[in-house]
Length: 584
DNA sequence: GCCGTTTTCGGCCCGACTGTTTTCAGTCG
Image (cartoon, rainbow, N blue to C red; front, side, top):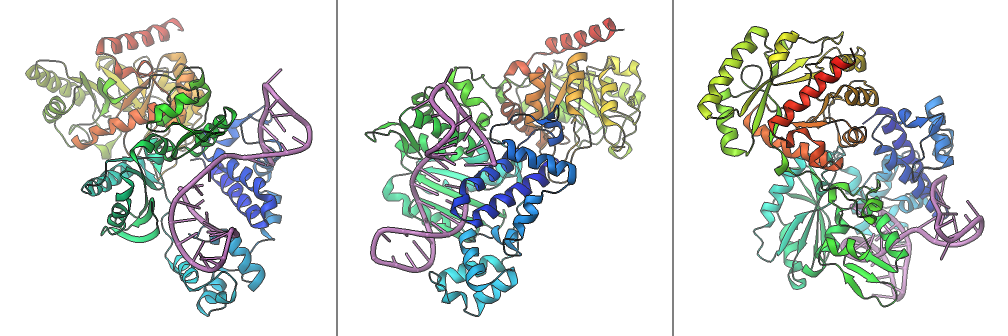
């Protein structure tokens, strides 16, 4: 996430909230700013790269007025409207708006009726009974607000997808013991496989008479620390061990498709879909798709039915972000997305020879018995990666012998030789060309000296005839390190020009490149490869995260090189060699 | 504030839960 984008999105979010506070007549202005914040948050590139010929590239939802504010921020690092607006709201307004259960109307009452402006003043007034004098505020509401205010600030950090998947799996496991549950599945951004997940949303199908019992069971689980809401059809709780809000929603089996569609989102996708429904004389809610005039149910049992009734192809959850997929579905052009079963091998793994935990033989045994792979590439580190046990040319030659031995024992060439060679500060590589030439696959990555011109370093690596792919191209570490500065547009152009593949690193803490850059890459005709960057046998399942990124990038199996057999990968390498030598 | 081959004005997605109310406002997703 780019710092500028984040900052700007925060300001627009805040402006939206302030307009909410100012009253109903500003409601839609408020929505527009909230909307802009979301768009900027989801922008694939630094917002400064989203400007062409001095203008913000036309984006649905951002018009003239907000565009001006973006430019004002980029030039002056502030937005005067925001400075002015802040004077019209309570001092701690923005902090207070984030407290569960506190909204603009409540804060307005506190501010105008009792002149309360800070968090401390409000807590005091809640405790000494002054709030109780306000109409509509009785004991229960006062206590709820107070406990929300006094609670230590919860983590608002989004969870990496892998962690969210593990948590949801374990919760689903706990709930599966409830016999009345007919179907249970994940929804929300988790089902869309976004790289990070906020809340965990679960959908359940059950008979109407069983709802109550299921909800009681759910909210009574030992793990539940806070109960936010408990109704007839839904409940919302806070799980202490996972430090996460978990929402469940119960519908009947015949509503399953409509509900799953609705709770999978995204919000933008659903709003677009609803507008489309209205144009066609329908309305959609979580119970089904109905005609407006007779309120007759047309679809709802499954998701396909909802989309088909609107004249659309069914859209895979990973594509539902309102970035053109609805238009594509209307034309019947939804791509057949890659699946995990299309993957023929892992392109990025480490063994004991550098910083991995397993010997080559152990890797071969594990992969043979757990994966249907045709090949797996060992890409151990090169010599300058001293802390990661990087290897020199001699050691790689020894490793080659070991690989041959293991393959011979297996009776097939499962293990491929390779390296993740360091791109040095000047863009040269950490191993000799003559060695690189003898290896089956060469990934080149940056691991240090991030303050150099990383774009030029990577471009230089792309121009080396023996570099097959660029590893974790942005260097980001989810939740702890922003990527090093790099001009990804240019790198993708050079990758396309030189026939170098770009890696989708599926490691749970990297997921690099991300879905948006991967989408950009295939638009530019760049070939992608997926690797797990595995360091132990448990890591091989990161392949599904890599595939998730590819699916969110609208990739078919033809976009991903390691859905091919090894002969095609050899052909890819030859094409690159030819290109490089043709241009020389 | 944004959008538009039905519109440059007049719309803007929709429903559940809570706490307060006797029919609803506020908040949330």
